[in-house]
Length: 115
Length: 110
Image 1 (cartoon, each protein chain N blue to C red):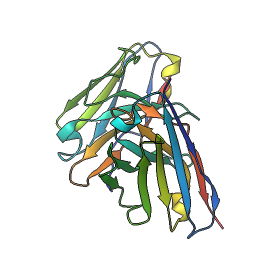
Image 2: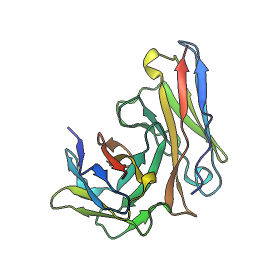
Image 3: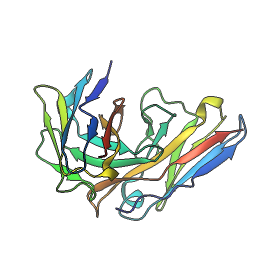
Image 4: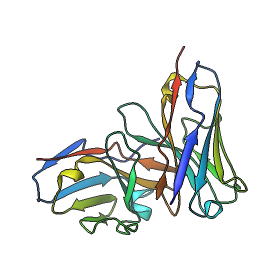
């Protein structure tokens, strides 16, 4: 059974940092691009970032470029998102997704940026 | 980053056919087509189709996707109560080097 389990969310003050993790199992994690997608409360899906199978290529949405860093550890089947200089507008549920395209999704982890 | 355009809501009767649209441009939908995802309230999204009409294993044939130019469409036939959900389109934008999503369409089954 495919599983993606996100962790690391929580309440953080504006300007603060958080590191999200996504533990993968049930599929060949090292063979696929992986993504982070976020969804603010009551709003739509917004793509955040992606990383290729060996970690050599990354892309970011303009809204997070320079503040967020995506990475992966294929030995640990884990995807990461380092989030710095957090803003109130970064408040959202953060999903990791991957597989051949967006085939597999986690349940999400909530990040709240507030003072 | 500019997103894809979807109507905010569509309402169609039980056992009828609903067609949802997604408009982009030649850098995204018009280039490689769109993926469609379904999201029920409180749950993560589920991939319904990609590259216009490739369905992942387990997705009903009632869901079919197509594309005409820079507009993608998702057609759902024989609407069921469980089809009531939010539907999102998404596409790779080659000019932005980013994936873009539509704002989502809330489908109501009457």
